[in-house]
Image 1 (cartoon, rainbow, N blue to C red):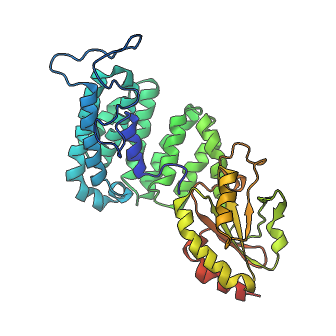
Image 2 (image 1 turned 120 degrees about the vertical axis):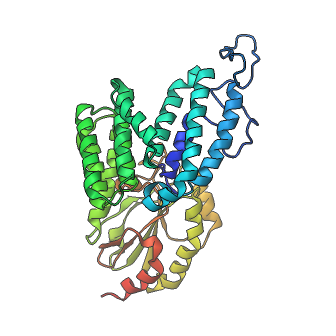
Image 3 (image 1 turned 90 degrees about the vertical axis):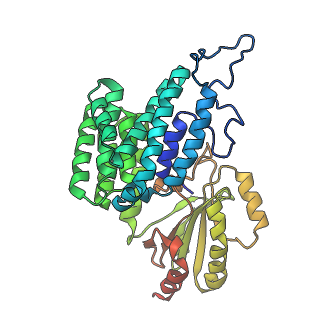
Length: 388
């Protein structure tokens, strides 16, 4: 389970930027927060500007947006639709008309709900970006024109132009490198701008032609940006680099366990260790537990140890879960003192882990052999146990 948005859900970000109806609600079933739900007013309550004669109400436009967004989700069902050239060509005839309809609806909503104008402008920019990736010339021209505007709107448009170049050329290292060059120039000129950090994270996570380009996008955040978002993600980026660089080298994982005792993987010298970063609230983590439990049954007597690293936010929920799962006797690391806000495991932060379950394998010599053990630990554990 990811802590941060993945890409398709960049589309969702754009959709909700205008505070559209949630997907699981029938259109009009609930008023959308922040937008007028009807044309009546109550004592002491501010009312929205009256709609011009013949104009639709904000609620009516929202209903149309909700229905259109459902249609769009059906067309953009996978990141590959945006990032793969052949799939873009195939999906374009369906996607472009829906995206353009969304733009028209944004314009209409902005007129009847001016208090949402800023949010809607951001959503419009996202959709112009998507349309440009699909090759819509009119949208690409609009982005180029917006990029000439001074201030934040112009900066955001400049960044969007580079995102289009990045997503539209996921197999072209040279073009993506030039896009990064341009974003880095903007970063050096405006180091506190969070929108630049956000753009670089999009580039790193979505469609880099090579791992080196993804790493370069992250390095720009660390080296050239000083804003709040850059500061927040810098630790994660450094952790991801640590994870990449540590494979094949000796490692030590140390923290306090659930009983409040200090623990280090060094105490398990000579053992093969499967490390499971997980949480009781994480559906995919729970689905993987039968595999982990079976590995413990099959190999614990032969030298396997399992180490749980809990990313739970509620210690009582964790204890309650373990009390109902007596077949999970292995050590669980969880230290409320080290994690006072109970947001995420300090070890997960240290290693740049933002999605769980994530599993490591450590061999008998304490060397980190895999940070992607989730996919194949059943076959790798017996191999490591046989090593001298």
